[in-house]
Length: 139
Image 1 (tube, helix red, strand yellow):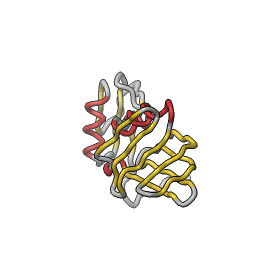
Image 2 (cartoon, helix red, strand yellow):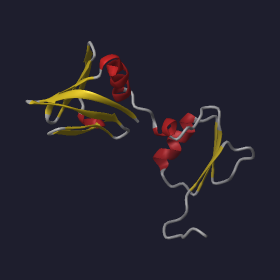
Image 3 (tube, helix red, strand yellow):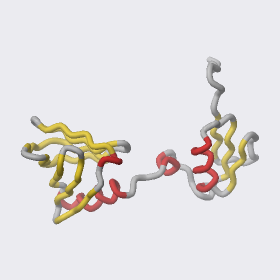
Image 4 (spheres, helix red, strand yellow):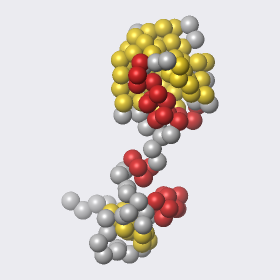
């Protein structure tokens, strides 16, 4: 998560406060201005000078980020994949036991060197294990 103290504008409000660049949303809190913009709600993201402009349902929000503006724009336009967020590496050997999420399994298959579903590979770099619904963990 990236965080910066900035000045932001949205519609007619201008405020100073903290902006956070988190996985699911871009958030700003300062004075009377509170914004939470979901990643899928930003059809246009531009940088001019040190100002990041984001088109969102509330209009256009601008954030004076200085030298960090291009980096924030890149993170918004190219968010990390689920596998990148959890640290999975392309060269890994991965085992998936009891994982029913087919979308996740497809991501794994395309993102690692070797994937075994249903049995544990020797020398696995990671093992993803899901308990059946209703099962309780010991301990």
